[in-house]
Length: 172
Image 1 (cartoon, rainbow, N blue to C red):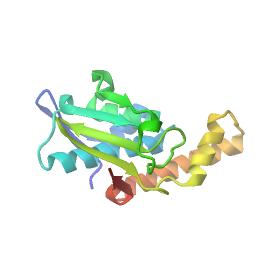
Image 2: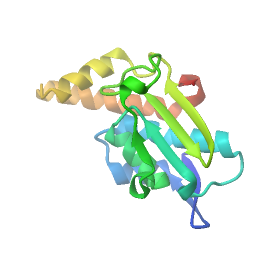
Image 3: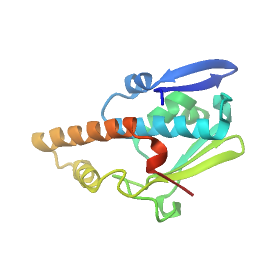
Image 4: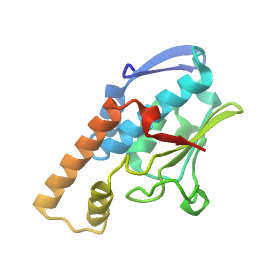
């Protein structure tokens, strides 16, 4: 799969590369950013086939409020700007949806009235990543832990970029 998402903005076709999302977001939450890009890429192709959808027709809901995911989805679809991005209370996400560093890794992507509701499969984001991310979020910041966290994030981003995403999704 190429690292481009095709979308229309008021009838004008845009080809948004993964690299543009990285430039927009940066590398701090790179795993979530790559996940958001790949989810949108997969869902739009799965829902629309060869038809390129309009940004204004897309809505995104998630129980994972990570900034990388949000920024990738915003860069491609402008759902945040348009008020079409919603955080689902994690208690309302399917219980089989695995936990993230915070929230649950559950997503609902809509194009018009068609949708895909998915979560990551358990283990797609490993326990060490979750545990380390939670330690970082509590303020436990040593130079060694910060370096290790950066390595884990880059490793997750590479994994999510390289994997056939359908292999790590469960449909709901």
